[in-house]
Amino acid sequence: MNDLAAAALAALTPYLPLTLPGSPAEIAADVLQQLIEKAFAEIGAEPLWAAYARHPSNPAAVEPMLAAALHANPALAAQIEGAVRTVEDNSTNQTDLSNISANGPVAGRDNAIDSHNTTGSHNTQNRNSHNSKTSLGGPIAILAVVIVALVAIFFVGRAVLGKITDSLTLDKDSSCSKFLDAGQEQELTAMRKVGVELGVRGIGSPLALPAITYECSGHPDETLGQAIAKYKNSF
Image 1 (tube, rainbow, N blue to C red):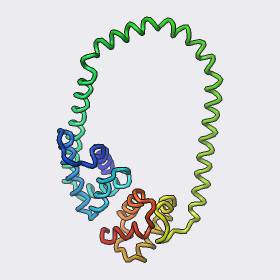
Image 2: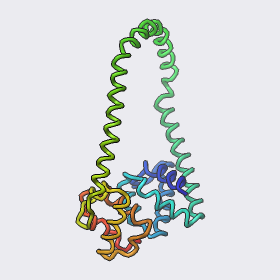
Image 3: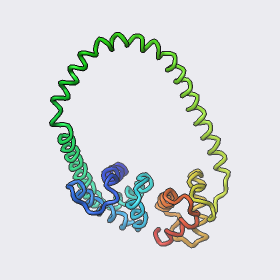
Image 4: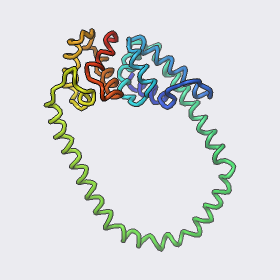
């Protein structure tokens, strides 16, 4: 169901947040949104979807939960699959009409002009091609070396940062940004520890980490305790 969840979010996200649907594509997107809301409601994760629908910035954070909901309800999954196709078909038709409206009346004229300009400039391009290759060869080679060096520095630096981050201690007063910088094992350990301290039932649920991660990504200045407390009755 992971592919279907990803496809559903990809089809719907460009239309979020939906207000008053008017075009066929927007109406189809509204139907898809209602089905996805139902999927999240069935697993008790309405707050997570509501937050995403208002600020659709990180589909990967809600995708695992949607996939789990669709796996639990194949009939709803089939409805969402049909709704995704409808949104995609209407979006394609709307794009095609826009392109025809924007480019159709002048396409013949533009092609004729392009053909004339291409013929006139062809010989000039041929004369300049050899000189351009020769003059650009040196700078391109230098640029390639610089890029390779920068990439190597980036990966080495990220590895070092990861080791430093893993040594950090997370508690309920830690910021969400610090939580997001930690490794997954450290995130899980801290989330469960803080959840127990705050009396959050079900904090060990597989739905908990994606929910807390999404909450923190939208509010990096919150504390981990504040983020977890919002889901006290959701798992």
